[in-house]
Length: 112
Image 1 (cartoon, rainbow, N blue to C red):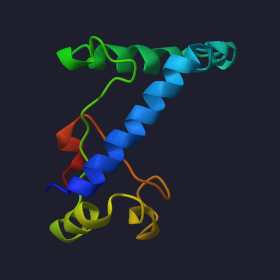
Image 2: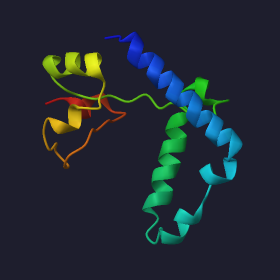
Image 3: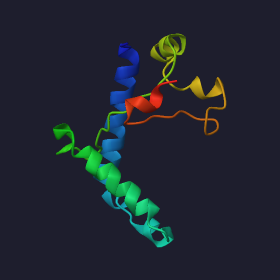
């Protein structure tokens, strides 16, 4: 499913974020969160994320890496996402973990 308008919007947004990272690198590389990581779960999550990014060579030189993810849904909702993006999806139901939009790097998690 491909929507050129949504792709263009996403690429423009990405460009803005990359500019902000370049202009204010110190804001995007803070480690003060470690002060609140008493049981090490945050550090573990960051390490898992960084290791997953290494699976794709395109991330080698990106300030804002791309992590491919999957969103499981039925065909009716998939077409709605293709038309309007994910912006209105969270209004459809409360979701498994509460209102929101969920993604995973494991396709098996998206099966009903």
